[in-house]
Amino acid sequence: MALLTLSSSMAQSVTSSASSISPRDPETCLTCHEKFAKGQVVHQAVKDSCMDCHGEMESPYQTPHKSKGKFKNGLSAAVPELCYGCHAKKNFSGKLNHDPAFTGECAECHNPHGSDNFALLTKSPSESCAECHASLKKQKHVLAGISGKGHPVGLEGRTQPVEDPLRPGKPFYCGSCHESHRGDFGKLLRHDPKLGMQVCSKCHEM
Ligand code: HEC
Ligand code: HEC
Ligand code: HEC
Ligand code: HEC
Ligand code: HEC
Ligand code: HEC
Ligand code: HEC
Image (cartoon, rainbow, N blue to C red; front, top):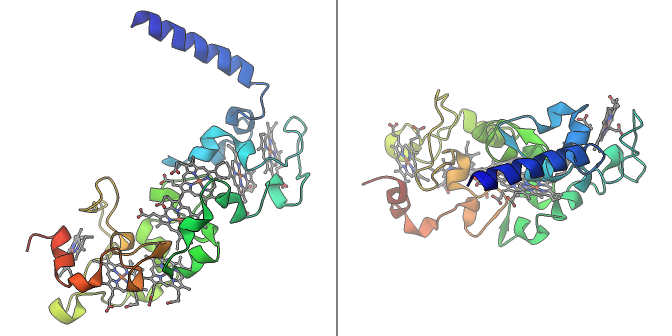
């Protein structure tokens, strides 16, 4: 055990001295661009290497450096093609599509670097949906006919995030009931609406 600890800390010091000369190590970039690895959620790609996306930058050792490629910011491709390089395009279309994901507007919802929100969202989860579906902020959703109150949708200003009963560790928000990219059921619902009230009993004891 002691041996293992020793050898891994040695390995670390070796890589960190070697990394100061490797543009692939994010630390090379973060000495000047520290804000890009900030946030409670940092994109794994950012932790791996800035160069996976910014492969067409002029040398990081001459500043300021500009793009030497076709795309701004030295990106190796534009969004969404950049994203499809690692996240298979086929996962963003299906039987039913969500317009902004299907048309590749990934950045409408996600920050490519880091964020304080679940899933690298640019806003808190339900707020990021209400950005375009603003009527949800005022209209009662789903249960209006039954209880008159409507079902909570994550816009009720809870001080603590509520957990999704079906997906431990994830917040309860619009995406607990709806898919965000593509879906199999009408209104992009996660569960077959033909189940009727049985859908409710997935989350509630009834
Ligand atoms: C010595 C400091 C320094 C280092 C190291 C550094 N940058 Fe920069 N970078 C700058 C400065 C200064 C600018 C210009 C700032 C501005 O335009 O506001 C800049 C601009 C940029 C831009 C915007 C370019 C444009 O077309 O406007 C990108 C993207 C970028 N850097 C990425 C990187 C990446 C990736 C690395 C690591 C491989 C890196 N930088 C390393 C200082 C640095
Ligand atoms: C997953 C791909 C990806 C990775 C990895 C990535 N970036 Fe970016 N970066 C982007 C995209 C996309 C933009 C353009 C954002 C826009 O147009 O608003 C961008 C823009 C930038 C800019 C210029 C725009 C600005 O807000 O000033 C800088 C500087 C930058 N990135 C630095 C970095 C650094 C430093 C790293 C590594 C720590 C990094 N990026 C890793 C995708 C990435
Ligand atoms: C160089 C490869 C690479 C590129 C390019 C890339 N990603 Fe990722 N991304 C990853 C890896 C690795 C993970 C972590 C494993 C996973 O979830 O697949 C990840 C995870 C994510 C997550 C989930 C984050 C979380 O914590 O839940 C989102 C959202 C995401 N990426 C969005 C994007 C978007 C948007 C783009 C384009 C701007 C993009 N990615 C480009 C490699 C990449
Ligand atoms: C309308 C907003 C929106 C758009 C547009 C969008 N996403 Fe997402 N994405 C989300 C949300 C919300 C989640 C979290 C889903 C959940 O609750 O598990 C997510 C999750 C992800 C994940 C994590 C793995 C997964 O599938 O759950 C990746 C990777 C991802 N998005 C990449 C992308 C890429 C690439 C694009 C562009 C082609 C894109 N997203 C467009 C909202 C969006
Ligand atoms: C960038 C704008 C934008 C964002 C952000 C956005 N949507 Fe959408 N959404 C649309 C558009 C455009 C349509 C298709 C037109 C319509 O039906 O309103 C749509 C359609 C839908 C539908 C299907 C409506 C139907 O009648 O079939 C659902 C459900 C939905 N969105 C849920 C969400 C959820 C959940 C989020 C957050 C993860 C979200 N949207 C974020 C633009 C957006
Ligand atoms: C408890 C589950 C649940 C939650 C949470 C939820 N929805 Fe829905 N949503 C539904 C159901 C079920 C329908 C279908 C209603 C119908 O067909 O009458 C629906 C319908 C929709 C539609 C289609 C148009 C409409 O208003 O009927 C949109 C758009 C939509 N939801 C967006 C959202 C957004 C955005 C959020 C978060 C702010 C959200 N939903 C939260 C279950 C939910
Ligand atoms: C994906 C899980 C999920 C599904 C499906 C779901 N709910 Fe809920 N429901 C919740 C969560 C979580 C809360 C608490 C949200 C909060 O307090 O912010 C809640 C709250 C409620 C409330 C409000 C309780 C209160 O104290 O105000 C009622 C009523 C309710 N649900 C009924 C239903 C009915 C009826 C259905 C089926 C049409 C349904 N729910 C489907 C997860 C779900």
